[in-house]
Image 1 (spheres, helix red, strand yellow):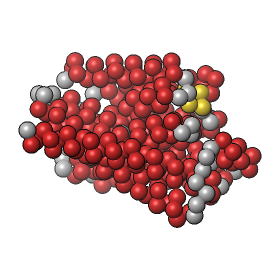
Image 2 (cartoon, rainbow, N blue to C red):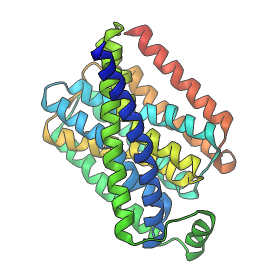
Image 3 (cartoon, rainbow, N blue to C red):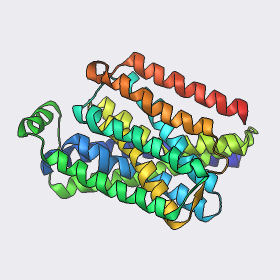
Image 4 (cartoon, helix red, strand yellow):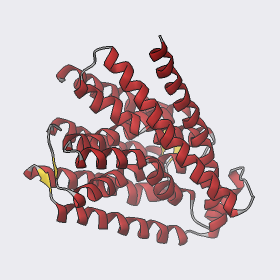
Amino acid sequence: MSSALVTSGQALLGLVLLYYGGEWLVRGAGALAARLGVSPLAIGLTVVAFGTSAPELVVSLAAALGGASDIAVGNVVGSNIANIGLILGIGALIRSLEVHANILRIDTPLMVAVSAVLLVLLADGTISRPEGLALALGLVAYIVFTLWQSRRETAATQAEFAAGTELDHGPVWHHLMLVIGGLAALVGGGKSLVLAAVTIASALGVSEAVIGLTVVAVGTSLPELAASVIAALRGQGDIALGNVIGSNIFNTLGIIGITAGITPLPRGEVSWTVLACMLGFALLLWPLAMTGRRLVRSEGALLLAGYGAYIGYLVATA
């Protein structure tokens, strides 16, 4: 009984931290974007996306250094699939998400490209150190380009965002503290909820393979889910979409790149079918985002249905 209470307490704590972490992060990031003259999309693609990907980085590094490279690769691949199928699916169901022109022109094609590059690098079964370092350098180039592109946006674009969003006009340090506190709460909440979910799944007799490909992958994506849902509720679709697409780019270039740069990453037990699913979800998002330059509820339902089919496949083949 006491063990069940501890697990329930962990789950409740995780949910509370995820809620407040997402609220603080989105509010602070949106205010920083307006104050510093950087577009909300750029903030979503960089600060929010990379911060909410911190759990994936921690899990993948620990797994690779501990000799469990398939968990390191599987965590990234599973998280990328969950980001599009689960998180964008839920976000679009809550409220239609407007798609910024740069997402269609630059970031979505880049996400598709880096997903394809990952499959090519895994063709020989291992991502080597030089390949990992090349991926990490690609991430640095992406960050620099995104921030440079954002600074070129017109003053009218910034004014339009500021006029349509209720912002906190307090000091910059206050916005920074909201971002830092939000990220810390999201990481802590995600970890707490993952521990509770793994305990419950194990008690129900679910296999470790299924737990790793579903609970751990989804669990490390909970910060992205919280941040995107809060952003959708607040009408900040740029941050919601930028968070997911930026996280997928960061997961592939940054997490795989940094981890492989430290120790070579074999593909392990991650099947080619699962890798193909990751690329398939990235490809599916592109035309959906093009239709009317928004993700509507029916498209969110389609993404969720696709994610449900993916989970069904994992359970059936475990």
